[in-house]
Image (cartoon, rainbow over all chains, first blue to last red; front, side, top):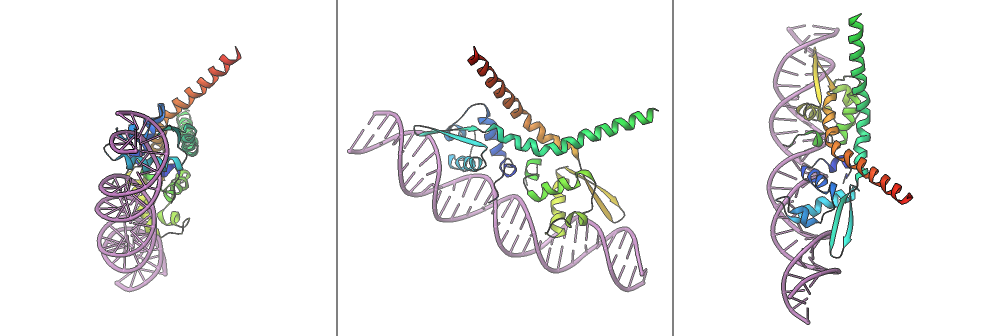
Length: 103
Length: 103
DNA sequence: AATTTGAGAAACCAAAAAGTTGCACATATA
DNA sequence: TATATGTGCAACTTTTTGGTTTCTCAAATT
């Protein structure tokens, strides 16, 4: 089983869960209320997100609150870094080209 | 078939292809040399990347050069934006807490 | 003590994904 | 013109994924 952050965010339901709990922790039942799939399916998504450490749990009696491990999101940001460099370079090249043409 | 950028970058081979052609355009055969799967499998990945407009083609005789549509990468960046806001806020909150404690 | 509620685990199923082999076809090259 | 090369497409197979239903278990409530 692969189980990395890119595979985790590939599923639209999981992306929605991530967005949903980004601001406040929520229980699986509360999360499931926002979708029309079973709570068990949500539970499976949460397990995947937990395994990827995108999400953390906090038990409170019989309820479990899930919240976003925000720093994990930076891994995607880090991967994007290489392309950010390129798109900045391309803009500079375009810029230089325009300047050269002016002369 | 889903076919969005998140599904596209979920596959490690496709991420490798993206990185590979980020700097210079390459033909399917040249790309396939870097992996130990068949050229046809690479061809399928390229089709998916093309459908997502992550990659563009340029025919040159019987060869087809694939290169990265760098601006598409910004879509991921855009999705990350919401979390970037949160992690900045959290840092500020931590910062405020530290300041308050000092007093 | 009995019942309800919140949650995860297991077994199962259908659809999708990622690979393979084999084929067709256009463009180069001998 | 015959052959080699670069590429994409189709059919098929295996594995993975996302969902379901059923079950168990612990914590709350009656």
